[in-house]
Length: 107
Length: 126
Image 1 (cartoon, rainbow over the protein chains, first blue to last red):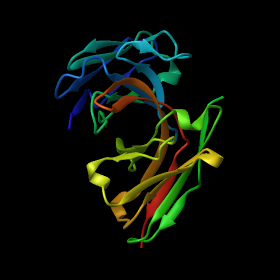
Image 2: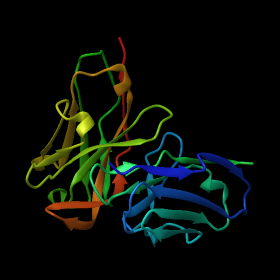
Image 3: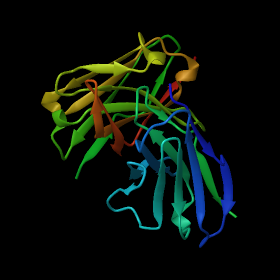
């Protein structure tokens, strides 16, 4: 199984900051990677697929990049509603797998 | 709009079974695979498997083989996930999620999840 590792596991930031979350796959997955945002008590919400394609309706301050084994999710200017937990997911092979999550908290 | 609505919370005793439903609306139910993902309290997301609503074919994560059964009723656009021989560590929120296909290879297709159901909390406790 492909292991997905996110870093950091958690961190604090302020509104207006630019933040980057990293996701690393244990083997190459081309660009078959998605990013999700999850708020407490809610289902995950798709942000990005194919490593860099923004899902319809998602604000343009979110962006994704990478291919192979190393990927990043960037939020260019944090808004209050962005404080949540973020997960990456590989869909290169079964079993599908998620990173352990990155919790973004208000500083 | 595309929507997945799941059944309500369940409390089960160890050794029992639970069956969670996921009713789809706003799209052709048989046109998209349905996956199930669970999340233990305070933990991350764990993929369980999928069902092809058109054929009824399934693919389960090895961890759940022998304990999970995914079925569907196309007449009411509903998918089901049944987990048997429940243990305390099966306590989790269970989500259904429709997959959008990114690519297919070797007879299998792979993709990302959108939308998700609202989740069903299953509590296993004696």
